[in-house]
Image (tube, rainbow, N blue to C red; front, side, top):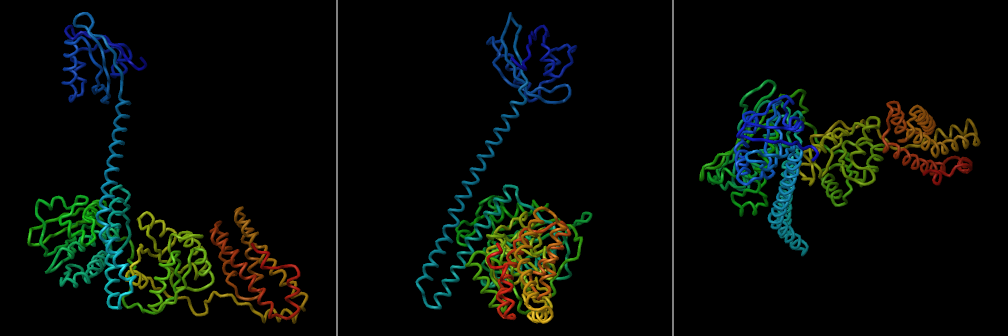
Length: 627
């Protein structure tokens, strides 16, 4: 048998005979003399008794059935061996031995994989059951409200039904968000960011978010340690706000009278890290001690009926605990029935290594020119309507290509960019915009996306966005975010529109005559047809100097006849080529703008001196020559 060693033993005479393979398996030198004491000293302590019982049973039955045990080699490594044998001539036994360590490890890996699959299946089943149970009530409320609104009630009834509709939709989203967050955390896919932020301002702002819900119930939210100088730290503000929102939301929901308080205070320091304690306390009914020990378990519902009423899944506390631990901290709860509940979170934050970008509170409000790129027509209409009602000038487009084209030809104060769009997605559109020349390249970009996982957000920020807002969009959050992103708008006269200078053409006709003027126009139209293709081919071949030279030649010709957006795009392409790069979306925009400009010039020639248009069209038909 391959890999097997042979042995003979007689324990009564302290006699052992091993084949060379057994010496190799057990880790002894060939000259070693095996004895009962030596052999027993290398049994794994947990297996020694089992080996002795097996040997006694073999003497009684005359056969040693195959069995495995652990052996500690002289080099300290533990292996698994399998032995089998039979009695031969009285007390002597003969048998074989194999090293089965690899087999045992493979079996363990298979068992672990099987257990993992079973655990995953159980987790999925639990989540599906939770989804079925928890989403059904708010969905039913949603459908009922929609049906009531569809029947066109009076204005007073409509307002009530719309409020119920919004509440039901919020309930559905709350459950879905919690379940998505929990599955992310449970699978170990959560990514904790480390960015600079004002800890005190974030905690204060989070408390302010619940003032309306508290006031509706006659409650007050008290803050302690939330005023004063900014506390600049590095950490994950989004995850911290999620934890605090879970705790404050529960406190407000389950407190019928009295107060809810949120306190912030430092606890200790360790090198460049400070530990901060946040305490959420309510004056509700409290939680029984027997239940208190289970409240951080998945799906644990202290009051299942009330949780269903409020559209909660019971996952919020489990998520909060796992997030706190992922951030290097901890969360604890204490309660006394009838006297309220207290949650305390202690988290470490490194001190900020940069200057906080705090929005000035006296910033001047006013209308902004906003570009909205959103492929969903309903979302596009709703957001455009909201921004227009706020007094902003909004241009709404349905894909990234049109957003890039608008940025290249018009000035904007802000771009709202959906990151998942057809034609050209928000990620590539953002990269293409940042590759343009100022002021187009510097326009603030607010990304909006349903995919708000930290790893995706990091990709968005690396592409050049300035801020991020997750879907579904809440109007108040959108307007607040826009307010914090105001920047100085482009100076007057920085308009990026196209302007054909007829005076230059008239002057050219006066000086050179119709024939030479027509030849120059033919050259311009031919260049608009041909040079974009040559530029694109050079870029594909990474012939950067040729591409830059072609772009400069076309720009020089264009500048002779007016002020065109294509000229500025060609300058941007030239600068990108000097860095040995050029975004594909910029090349696509080159073709689009060249085609549009050819049409414009064709129209403008109709008002030029009569002999120019026919002469210029002899060789070039711009509308059919550009692809």
